[in-house]
Length: 64
Image 1 (cartoon, rainbow, N blue to C red):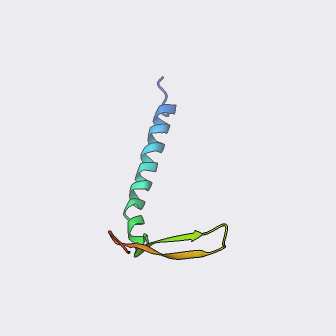
Image 2 (cartoon, rainbow, N blue to C red; image 1 turned 120 degrees about the vertical axis):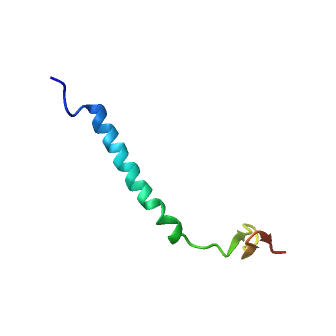
Image 3 (spheres, rainbow, N blue to C red; image 1 turned 90 degrees about the vertical axis):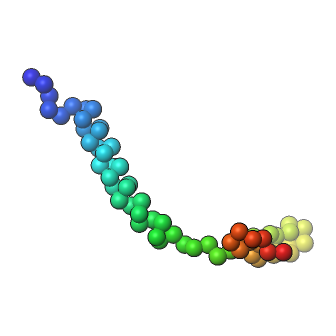
């Protein structure tokens, strides 16, 4: 008599179920992603203690 549930069938069913769950969340995640307005940088001089924090790029353009 052939077994109805084999190890291979269980693994295939689990993989298919996981892919279905992941595909369902794929459309949700980009909508909740934060929009990037600009890229910031923070620098601290270890010798003098001076710090700088500012925007160096907005969109595809560098800020001089």
